[in-house]
Image 1 (cartoon, rainbow, N blue to C red):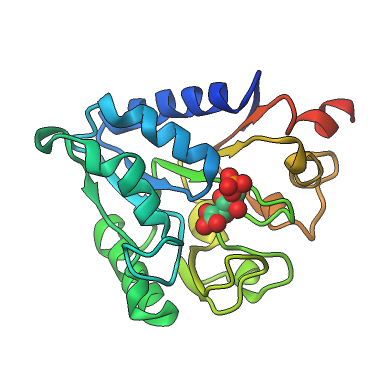
Image 2 (tube, rainbow, N blue to C red; image 1 turned 120 degrees about the horizontal axis):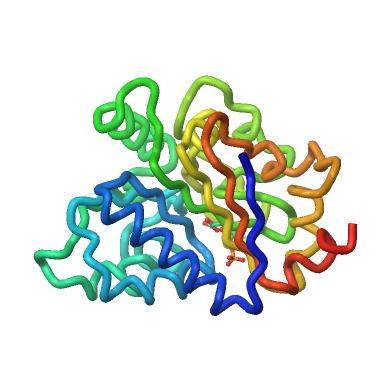
Length: 232
Ligand code: 6PG
């Protein structure tokens, strides 16, 4: 099942996303956060929500330490986690990028299996979309897109900047989620949105392969990002 929600602007996308995250968190869900600018605004809005009982994960990160400027964890800490008072804090499982991409991917895969079993179903996975139609750290033409066995893999060479190795959830893990929520804003994303979600989708676009089954695909867009899709 998929649904598209078009909002006036990126602030409205962030507000709707924050509401959805808060609702899954209040039910004690396992939620994977994404990097990127639109999620960052949503995380800021969540500072006043209680995330107690929820478990936060990361759908991808750069293979760097938790304080590096490129770190998605650092962005989540800065925008949200560092502001939550102790009683309302969620459990946080970060990708240990400082171990290097391979070891960090192995550790995260083991953690996913330990917490969620060998058939893991996240309650909510947040994703962004790059202008090249990458999502998480699944870049067009790179081997991680074709991974069919593992849930988390290393990406030694990303397809765009920052040019640091990554660690990413794979399509089997993403497509097993109960809900996958894309957050996409800005006119520069309109062609990638059309490639990922237009009819027919472009198979070269990694995001076109994100189709949770039996889970729900929700795509939150601002009007600019939806521009080409809406004209189809
Ligand atoms: C990352 C992200 C990545 C991101 C997209 C969109 O680690 O870089 O997880 O997949 O979501 O590149 O990013 P923006 O929202 O900043 O455009």
